[in-house]
Length: 220
Image 1 (tube, rainbow, N blue to C red):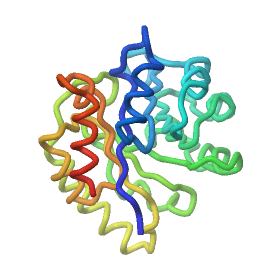
Image 2: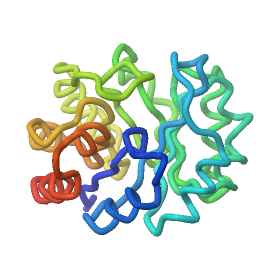
Image 3: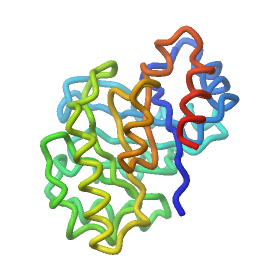
Image 4: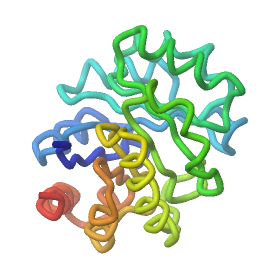
């Protein structure tokens, strides 16, 4: 049986003292740390490279959930795995060679994830199910933190769970990223999400550690 997890997004952390925020998240019970990698091409923003991931790995005891929102992800898989990724997720829309890149990730012994943008249909997953450990459903259009949750994501989650059941692939973890807050996390979990990502929904509150702990309680 899959265990519900929370993966706080470091995109919203204070990078002038990232170690302090990592300690806070780990003390608060985070099971994963989510790292959004953006290249300014696939999405209209630029964030972290392998060097930053490596620095976070040195500061953290929690597995790193690295989300590549970049073009040509196959060219960078080895760099991010070498930097310390434990989960490595690519976008379905980012390369014509999805299967090849997923196989490369799996060959390195890292959990392989595939992400779908809000407009991308679930049916695109059918021929790669044996090659993935994680499906990341974007509940905002990728590129920036602090966006509002897209409501029809709930229906997409329900349909995805049925899709996995019909394909004997219920072992694959389902993750949701974008607009997750304490107010909607139960609805998202109940729709069939296994791993929730929250950045501003944690960090932009008065007591981030307490907010994280409340979210974890909701997921139990």
